[in-house]
Length: 70
Image 1 (spheres, rainbow, N blue to C red):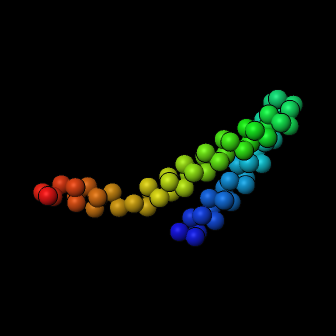
Image 2 (image 1 turned 60 degrees about the horizontal axis):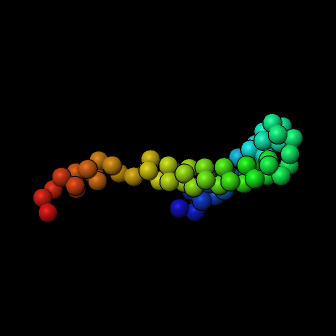
């Protein structure tokens, strides 16, 4: 799980930089660019973390276990 968190924070830093640059170039305002650069990548970083976890989840076992009578 430590590797997943490191990967998530690495992705977040790249995304913050790109998000700020694009927003600044489009708006000319560092305040608006800063707001966009903070909010959007943070939400994406959380989504990315759970996306990675979902890809590693054993869905076949989960489906098999759910079909057993309780």
